[in-house]
Image 1 (cartoon, rainbow, N blue to C red):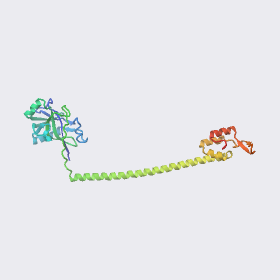
Image 2: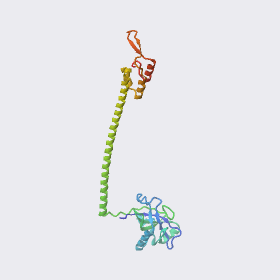
Image 3: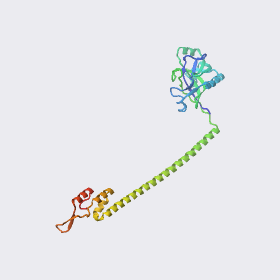
Image 4: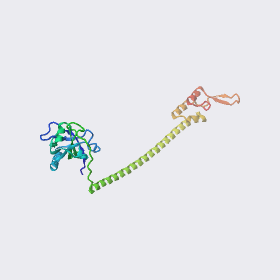
Length: 301
């Protein structure tokens, strides 16, 4: 199914070096586009350029031979419903490779005089084009105008007109599109289910990893405490119960240093309490210094 859209473009009327027998330049050759963004603006960006070439021109020449002449009006009045006064009539078309499509126009006296006085300087074809390929498919009419998008010989793209309604799809095309839609919906549902299954699996793995990390942390903590208990047990004869509890709060490295610095006995010299006569313990200078390093009071030590 071919979809046609309608547009117009403008080219200078006073272009030099026209082919013999031709007095108007209608289209440049090859790919072309308007300075105001068409045909991209007309097709939502799906089509970037229009096209003219020998094969396209041959179809337009054949159509003119069957329908001649083609109306040349003023400012596209016939297309917009403002009027149908003729400025001229196109009776021949010719394609020149590398230059484009040209026309021979039989001007009306009024139009010829206006062109001679430069009251009109541009020619604007009103045409249909293939919405997928950009190829010009029909030359509907041409207008004299003074508002082109560009003023050079290859200037194109002017007035935007309502697109021709698309031909409704037949039953076979509709069935094919429906099948494609349903297939895509099924594939989308399958992908969604796969995504949800992966999310569940990831959540399970994360929970398992968290559990394993907690168990490893508990094992490491238990091993650390066991090592500290073993060190304290090995120095039990040097420790008073309060000192032992204080040493348990140290890190493993600090505990090793503290135990290595302990004297052979926690009570190395004694005094007699003057009031009761009871023997009390005092610390050596080294033991007092060790208490200061460990953050333990001499009384507890």
